[in-house]
Length: 193
Image 1 (cartoon, rainbow, N blue to C red):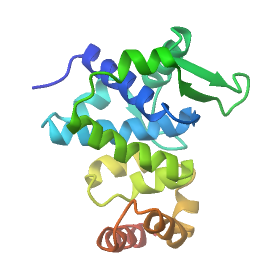
Image 2 (cartoon, rainbow, N blue to C red; image 1 turned 180 degrees about the horizontal axis):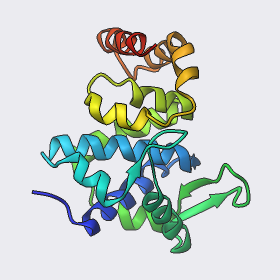
Image 3 (cartoon, helix red, strand yellow; image 1 turned 30 degrees about the vertical axis):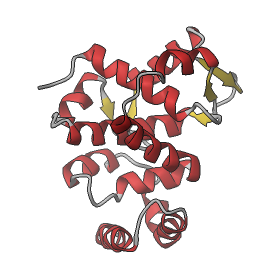
Image 4 (cartoon, rainbow, N blue to C red; image 1 turned 135 degrees about the vertical axis):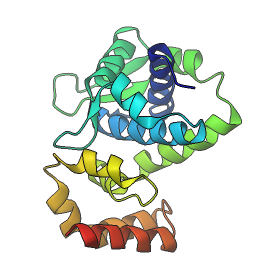
């Protein structure tokens, strides 16, 4: 069973509001958090992740997975008053869920959704943008064909690999990963060099 385009956008709206409910979030982190959430969601619901990728046109970008559709949906949430904006004229636009956004999107989250969303919120709040992308690119649980496709056009891959020990330490220090996962990430990142 797949998701309709409307269902994917409903998920996107809910995740964007959830991730930005407590603090200002840059749109770049939201893109990466959504990518990870949609992957986890597809695994849990036994939906083909590639189908979701095609529906919202997530593609490799210089800074990691990117979707114009997600960016457009964030803009719609801003226009509809569900997101507040800080630095609207800068390259680094920050968004935060408005009261209206929280009221409209967070009332019907199941306990199961809450578990996934809170772990991703934790990830994007504790880490800088480059650390989030390192976690996605070298996550040992995301299939290689997905990671390889998205890392293919990355301009930051070299720096991620150069500082892999620093990134792994940060992921461990913030309890995003455990030692077993750290060792798997280290092996993956070492093979890529």
